[in-house]
Image (cartoon, rainbow over all chains, first blue to last red; front, side):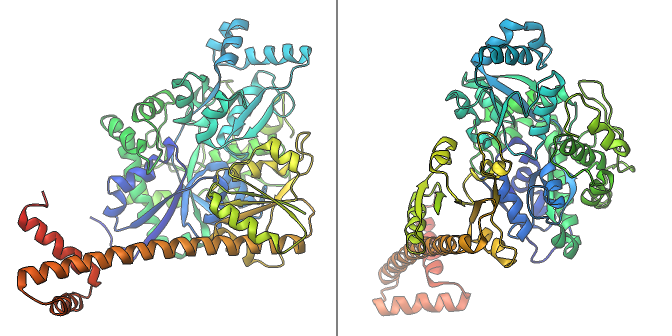
Length: 378
Length: 192
């Protein structure tokens, strides 16, 4: 059933998060082995190190923040490096969590706004704090170029909170979020599971909104691979994609969720209590394979670039549609999907819908979209 | 010049700090975790950070100058020497510098840090190997004892037999000895 890859020796990196599941499951359930692949998974401590190791070839590929792959490819915030995205790893999966004290204050101020999962109560609180001369609230994300950063910014801005002027945004590693919230160093954060559920479970925090509330079926992590390696090893890359596709499919089967939580919970992968991982998988409505979740939509890449543009991270001269199509490679995905008998969309991009604010995103009009928000630097 | 060394591995951080003392008239501090307030008070020109520290992502976010962070930082990659950044990543170390700092001043710092990281890795590797060698010698001694008792061989004869088994199977003598002991254990019922 599998092509022998001979001495195929692959090194892939990941960060301890629920959405590393396709890699973890491909290793633990033998989907890599079934493709004749010998894969070493390397648990990394920071996204910057994941990016740099893939860039220099110390890792062949990794579980990455989808926008980080685009930023690195375009040389945004560093030296340009050639990476490609042949597969996405999940939809949804993250949440915005604030301290218990802040959640209670917001609920007193505007219970309906909290129930509607908007930042409207927060906008009112921030205005009141400004009157009093209080210090700005501090929110943490995991990386400047991440879905979590754009999700939090989108959510805040939708209710009139300017994320660059009205709050302080900092970067905190995911496993430290709950501790910093408890210690009062941050007032809230946006992060992938299970770290939000962890903060809720120990009473330090309360989740106010999920990624699915802001944009249902929104992209998040992707497989990023070194482009030079991908070009030199097309067969190994295809075997890798086949293994990951089968693993992603396995992750989404309802009967496998308890086992998935148990696998992720181990120290080798996420290292968090299995019941919390299970709860987080459910609450965040994470999808690994259904509804074309693994497909690397060029329109997803273009949306990320539109947000980079919106927040002043991207040079306005960059052609968003062209840049997105250079990094995202649905062609590589379709070859692998066909080989395992799975359906794949025949279009590279789609009209993106499902936003909480009712907008639609058309990749052909990405720059106008970025400029069309009330709060924008574009 | 002030250098801040961030490394969750305190022994390695101490080694790096020690190694940096010789190269410049500079001030070195070390910390296991990056704390913004402490860093602001020290105002380092260079932050040397271990690649296995989660604080790298926080440092990456300090690229933009803000009110709380008036001195933007960049990741140090000397373009006059393309392999340097790659070598540093492989050695497990990265450096962030205050924007505009001359590469000539930063390079010796990064190079000294890389040397210490590699030295630490080698020391740890040597230690692990020494432990494995010791364990292997004990295993061989026990296997020799077993053969002497069960086969009535003297010590030299037992060792020669082990060596022959190792050569015939093309495996290390320690592995053959371990197999022999396991096999003997299973026959006695210890393996259950």
